[in-house]
Image 1 (spheres, helix red, strand yellow):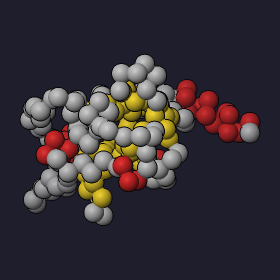
Image 2 (cartoon, rainbow, N blue to C red):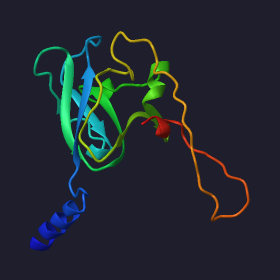
Image 3 (cartoon, rainbow, N blue to C red):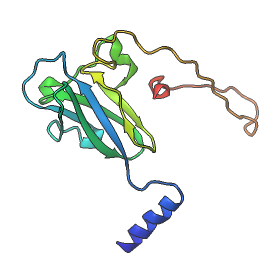
Length: 165
């Protein structure tokens, strides 16, 4: 126990976290008809549908939950009740915050090293309810120092989603 505590203190002294950061997930359910709770599921919860119930404490139809997660990439979904009420995330507006893995389309979070409050999104959309304007395109410049590798071709590849977050 002491070894773990001192190891954690050492890493903290170096500015590294041994514990996760807080992230708040928020979903607007104003356009949904449903009975039962709103839930969050994802890889961080073993994809169970009943584990993480979200709450609407101020009756504004925006359900929230805060979790502690380590930095990394996470896939997740919001549920109306259980898996029968899962978001499908197939609309064009869902392309800005999702990725498809093994035929399943999920939301994606790239968790950094600081606490995060995610924007409020409409259920089954990547945007706020009533917003139909997709995010603006962003120009990105990549610079790679290839001097140590000699001559040859260099390629940039990957899913553009990972560039968005």
